Image: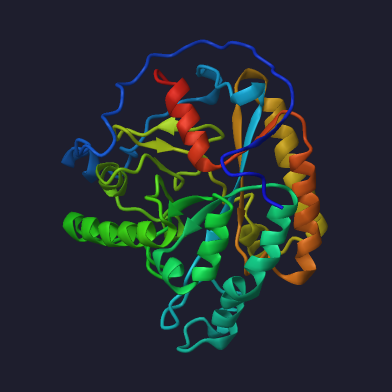
Amino acid sequence: MPRPHGTQRLRGEPHERPTPQHPGKPAPPPRGQPAPPLRDKQLRSHSDNPLYDYSPIVGRAPIRWPGGARVAFYVGLNIEHYRIDRPSTSTFAGTAGLTPDPLNYGWRDYGPRVGFWRLLKALDRHGLRASALLNSEAGEHYPQIIEAGRARDWAWLAHGKNNSTFQADMEPEEERAYLVEMLDSLEKTTGRRPRGWMGPALTETFRTPELLAELGLDYVLDWTNDDQPYRLNVPGMLSVPYSVELNDIGLFVSKGLTGPDFVRVVKDQLDQLHEDAADGGRVMSLALHPFVVGQPFRHKYLDEALEYVTNHPGVWLTTSDDIATHYAGTMAGA
């Protein structure tokens, strides 16, 4: 059964080794205040990413997670709604362009109907709160799922309206209106305004982070380029690690790995990050989709992987919200 609301589980001992500081960046503005827009010159440059600077992990101030943990672990649980009239994530490309496409649509629709509820038992068994990456249309279509997450005090992240519409090719005012409508829907269904964002298929425009900052959000998961949180060049906005590698779609669907392969990958990921974290905390996200890992023949392997993580020394079992809060509160000059 889930642990009481607001509690996290921690296993492990403190381990500290200071590393050199580097020059700090300006403090973020108060939440909800508009962020200064990125300069047009920045947006026109295609050779460099204006959203963040290069920062090698070896030269950073050390992150210290609560209780001396080395690794902050969270489950990124994708709760998604797919349109029946658009191609989306598919298990068989041959029918993906058809409307309707019963083969692929039905495969995805297994998630909210069955796979989610099997996965929920595994999270409960190991006392894990999810970081739910929620399409607003999923919140509107699957109220029983939202009820289950609210009862367990999950973190709710904005994940666009649906997973068939990418966050791309929008003018700023069009995107702002889209985001406002989506966030208002999520707040209505979950009872909480999201703090974090991950775009459908990790998509953004160049202006998405600054618009999100204006609307009160303070972190994104889309830029999967680090094992630690860091500040974007948008005041008040962090990047929190997410993984397209430690992700059931990539592992099972794209690479064709087996259940035992999945367990080994999860174990190897955690062991290596734990070793790396001798000079500062790391983040490990496990990205799950109920229509993939929620299949019956994969369930026991998810359970085995979570058993290893939750009993590993030096792991903070947490949410992406709490990772962002801790980093922002303790690494002001990073």
